[in-house]
Length: 244
Ligand SMILES: Nc1ncnc2c1ncn2[C@@H]1O[C@H](COP(=O)(O)OP(=O)(O)OP(=O)(O)O)[C@@H](O)[C@H]1O
Ligand SMILES: [Mg+2]
Image (cartoon, rainbow, N blue to C red; front, side):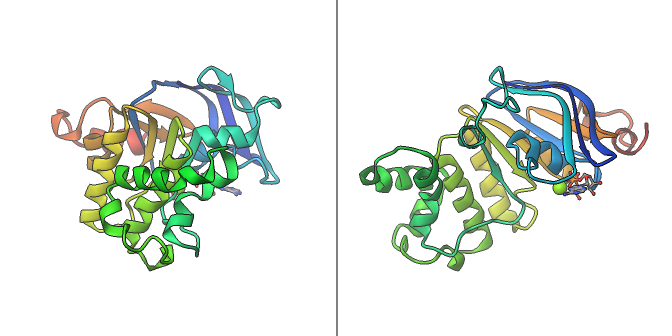
């Protein structure tokens, strides 16, 4: 589903991803871990071409999604963002109503008729387990919701445009355990329909939700083979993370 082919991403002289080659299968959850500054966010951002406008940012090599090179000039960035949605660490809701937040992307990038918005909004809000909590306050500002509710709302907004790929950059790091559990449960329920990349600093979370755990180190990804409790030498996780 997603192929990195000899892919390099650099800010000026600083190469963050270095001739990275990796294939990610569809309909699965891949967790990405790595020390701060190792390039996890950069890796997600290039997949939806969010770094295109950064002045000194440049790339070499290819990324294919569903067999298509996302950087080819004829591959339009707006259609790419319909297929690839990103969720950030801090929920990013707009200071408009809950309902308008949910259909925001739908208005921008789809041709779905306006009369279908209410049904679509209900469908995606149910998918993110938020409908019961907000059905009576859809016209209230989204900023009145709790952090955990806001994060589920951003996910509903992303799902509403029907992406194939979901990129999640530490989506639960600012949430309490209950909201974290809700998001984890939700993401696991979505993997049959989406290819999910989940960046986390929590190794236990990576192992419990993901089908595959990748460690980003020195611009390359390596598979982290077994959950830490099953490894003979538990310190080997630190070896993978910090040592060459
Ligand atoms: N806009 C930018 N301009 C210049 N350098 C950048 C820019 N964005 C990121 N970098 C650099 O790229 C490297 C990777 O950053 P990135 O944010 O991808 O790391 P990360 O693994 O997500 O870190 P963290 O775990 O702290 O979120 C860092 O050295 C960072 O300073
Ligand atoms: Mg980051």
